[in-house]
Image (cartoon, rainbow, N blue to C red; front, side, top):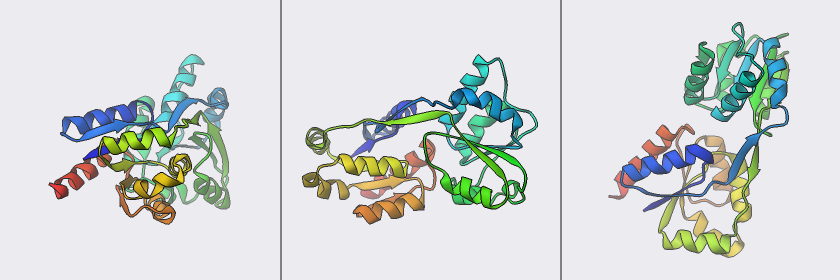
Length: 248
């Protein structure tokens, strides 16, 4: 059994290392690279004006903190902080020294159910994100009467690959499980796979962090899709270890 890990950067490297430590072979094949976003410098002006600050990933926190440090500024003390998932909330709390609210299930739908986002009419909300995504949060908060702004503090750059080279290597390596953590990466991954290899790809057990992505994965053709309920390495590792136990 071999797991194909498509997470970018240190998260992907760390997950592969943890899998190897548990005796599970893993191949690191990131689908995207993470770079600073064009709106990153604007974060130092937008954040002090915000009543509520929402972060969608650890990448948003890392890049924003770097920008604040360079500008000799700091995270606002009077804002209400929210994060999409527990891991991101813990990460943000370390940098801000503030309480960070998060939903038990780490997705946009459950974030919007938090009491801190129920009565937001007239409030200024900044969503720290990458290039695209989280439109449901934006649209819903606008409908609730809030003044909402995106700040794209990082950007994702797709890393193209040739499936006629990659897939035979994965087959030789006995890859039978695949991790993809966003709908954008899922679409890009499928687009990169030439038609002759798609039947083999769709037979892999696919692990995704939300039911929304799971539904999309089944729609495009994956036979076995596991919703881990979270994109944290801890939860992905637990789901993979559980699946490994079933096969043994």
